[in-house]
Image 1 (cartoon, rainbow, N blue to C red):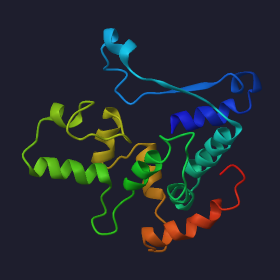
Image 2: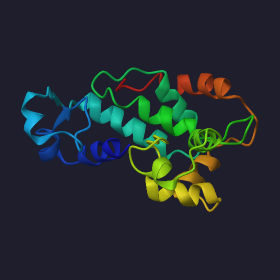
Image 3: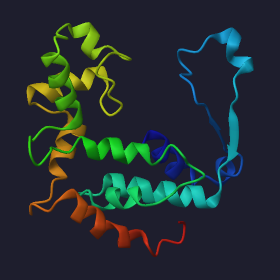
Image 4: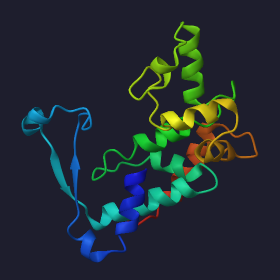
Length: 183
């Protein structure tokens, strides 16, 4: 979602926007072997006006007080921004489950502990067993203790007051983006 925020911001900067290119990698760039980088395939994409429009729409959905707009993103295809769809899916998975009250990260952590994994390092280090992409290692502690950081509190606040199912919310959100000119 940070990239979406940056694209939305750069949209207002014509000098930057017209020269902007995205480089898509399908490997862990931070952990990549420097010597082997030359052999790796990296796609360069021009950022189009449509991509900037999609970024604006996604950023507005992320900042909305309820999750309906984020659910609306799930029903769309974004060929220019192929990484966009997994981000709201992962964020929405962190909403408390109607059956357990746990988000995806909390449920995964309890599953790992039940299997005998109880070492802090193996659970919480980056690239560890928990494999969370929503929370970093510094947000997990407060999130699990109950004094949730802003992103955790925001996820909990996204639950609508009525007890509609996620399927109902997804169906209600789909028409919200139907008239958007960028999609």
